[in-house]
Amino acid sequence: MRRTLIAGNWKMNGSLAANAALLAGIQSGLDQPSCDIAVCAPAPYLAQCQAALSGGLVAWGAQDLSVHESGAYTGEISAAMLRDVGCRYVIVGHSERRAYHGESNELVAQKTLRAIKAGLTPIVCVGETLAERESGQTGQVVGQQMDAVLATIAAADLSNIVVAYEPVWAIGTGKTATPQMAQEVHSLLRKKLAEKDVAAAANVQILYGGSMKPDNAKELLAMPDIDGGLIGGAALKATDFLAIIRAA
Ligand code: PGA
Image (cartoon, rainbow, N blue to C red; front, side):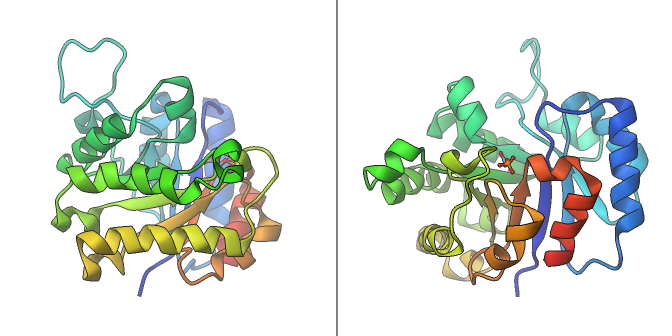
């Protein structure tokens, strides 16, 4: 039985003061949650998350990592550093990184491998643009994104990854994929995972992301292959994030 994971992606938002209030709000509002919970914070605030969340019910993670192990890579942040500040998760291949930082399927795959090797759980993001969906390429695009990762990691590593389906046209736009649309892609992704290892594929958490909100979370999370959410905008308000956790 897969546990549900509700993960917040704060993106480039926050401050020490705002994060402190948000984290306190989330923690004080948790009432014996039955799902896994995480927040993915900007790197400068990961130590703050560690201090505020250690020993509690909310895990924390980063939004990106370097593909390199260590050394002369100015500005980069290594997997080991993320482990050092207690991260459990790291988002890999978010569509904003793919679009604005030119991250290829191959780089995303290598970063996924780097995260796994360091003991982090990568949240591997895949998703199509509106043009790709409208031209009937959704399956092919997310399939290729997933294949690149699956060609790079070992079958045994499937138990160490989370996948997030995030249609690019739904991110931050208020447009959500219908539960049926999302389920169709989630089921396709699970079939891809099963080509690598049937038993492990049944246990991989596949999250939906893209304008998930308190008022649509329940119907999305009710779909058989939707195992949680990667939440952007709604993760910045404790009441909204808690409402999604409750829906799960
Ligand atoms: P959104 O972002 O919930 O604001 O659409 C989701 C994401 O980009 O992970």
